[in-house]
Length: 379
Ligand code: NAD
Image 1 (cartoon, rainbow, N blue to C red):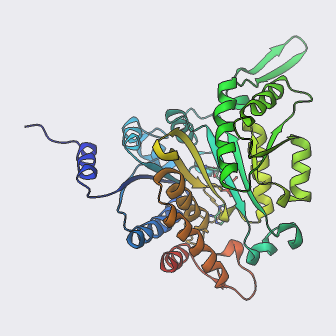
Image 2: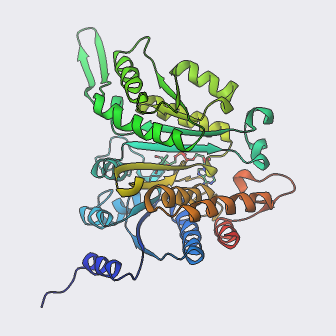
Image 3: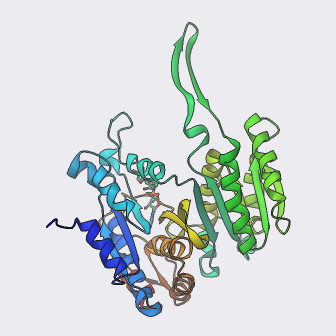
């Protein structure tokens, strides 16, 4: 008689209705394990309230995997991730693995996951609770009503284009990068942006540099073609330099923003700065579409492993918790639970509970685990 592998056993338990969603977590390095633990607690609480059961499976990714196994992520762990309904990632990296010339680096785990699941759509929402306006470098009156969603293409463009590299020429060194996009790659990310705009205020700003770059000309033409299928969405185009300025001057004028990989990378960090603390910003990287408008995806906080505060139990888990809300909405179809988690985060902030990064006079400072417990309690 053959014995079941662990994954086959899990699949059998899913079929028998023993649990509803299988989540693979990769807590990673630095503050990752602490904020993932807090987020797990919140998701389990949401499951109890809304009547779904989560099965958790943990894999090693990043620096911890390099130390334990010599690679940033093992093939057998990727195979575990293959069986998941969604992946919840903490953060990878830290000074002890920070050698750009090393052949094995923590971020290879991220690239492996993005490539394996073709996670081409990176979504970064930014909303700012009024209680946290003081954390932003912008004046409070500019923040009222800010509700942004960056949709960034994640698997193409300059970061992957070939040729790329440095060469020595008779007159000195020369380096080249290449910015390629096929219209299909533009089309699939644009569709996600239009679909999202439809569920929000039906405004979409497409970012390019069509006055200079051939690639941006194709980007703009393709987005205009897709727009014909979404007559209810108001589309406008901005050059990236202007978009960077307008985001500071009037962030509330934007809703969904669509950009290729490099422009999206830069603008989403600018949006993070507008929000004040990176500890509040979730993100989702979506790949394969599933049935019913859901996606397979990887959900993680906007920040990194925060080595400066790692091991102290003081990191803000709210970005990770809000990334769980995105996971419920985009991957698991548990919409009421997603809303409840976002409402619970709002409630704890309104109640004056803060981690160190967002603390201000008159509010109560909590550690990572306590903040997770407070949100779980508020659900
Ligand atoms: P970082 O986001 O880790 O830290 C920047 C600043 O934000 C630090 O002061 C940190 O304390 C603070 N911060 C970040 N997350 C926080 C949280 N949850 N609560 C409170 N404060 C928080 O960025 P960095 O310092 O540029 O990078 C540190 C390491 O993280 C590097 O090894 C980098 O490669 C890695 N990194 C990983 C990811 C990822 O896993 N997706 C993303 C970015 C950076």
